[in-house]
Length: 178
Image (tube, rainbow, N blue to C red):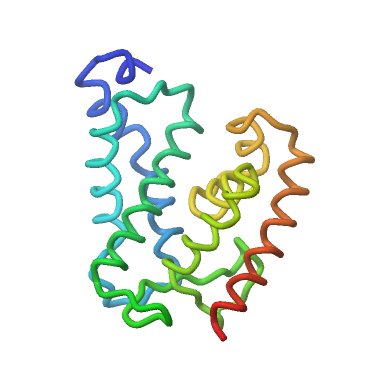
């Protein structure tokens, strides 16, 4: 990508081309949030953009790599926002996310973003690939095929790891809820 090669204006040219995808990722990240949440999808896209500007050292590979990084930055922005709003261990004021289609939870069972982030960090400590798959699929909305391409693994491996990671995270988050 020209931006990674030092073309300062490349990001400004790229963002309009992927803006719809960025908004899709942001809406997915915000799914299950209360309607009056102080951080809306557009603000999340803007926050990701500001963080992308600071990541010029990244060697961009392709569109899915860019979207994966955007999803990671949006996840970080949501976690930072939740922590800044006074996160307490048992959910006091924490940003809530619903693990619906992504992890197989239900709309009635929201989990806070900080607990999910902590669970993903714990998963990454012993299986980084599964953690990345969750990040790409759940936050980024990438398909199995796009995730496989991004990670350089087979689609079958993505499907298998996705199932195992979902089960592990749902168990971990169930414990966090008491």
